[in-house]
Amino acid sequence: SLCGGDVRSYRLAVLFLLSFVGMPTIFYGDEFGVKGVSEEEYRTPMPWRDGDMALRTFFQKGIAMRHALVSLRRGDFRTLHAEPGSGALVFVRHFGKETVTVALNCCPRSVRTTTVRVAPLAKFWALALG
Image (cartoon, rainbow, N blue to C red; front, top):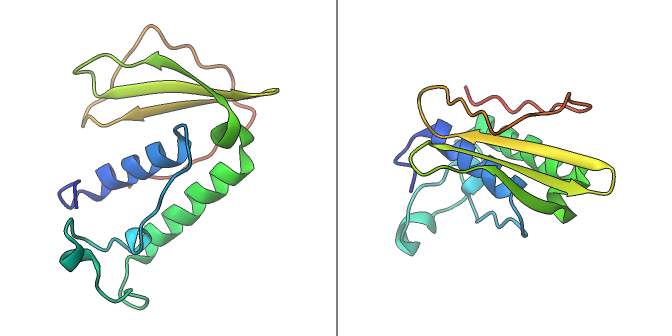
């Protein structure tokens, strides 16, 4: 609801939620795209049959990513790029020998930064935003 119905923005917010520091909280119906900001709006029956199944699958993949990468659950946090107005946030989560770089871009255009250097990926998680 706070994303104005923009599914791409909503998915980006979900990725942020699942990769940022702290325990993510997923509210009843979020995984099906239940809309509303007031309790009257979002306290509707769960749309088991009519819900957005692609969005539910996206949540499942994101949660699986968080479970598979201990850095996203317990790792240190370091910001690599967060310039006001850039629309991009890049940060690193690190735990033990595992390092995960998270790059989020909420702009409709590509964002370049010279401050971020990403090491070759040992693991790559693709959560398509399309």
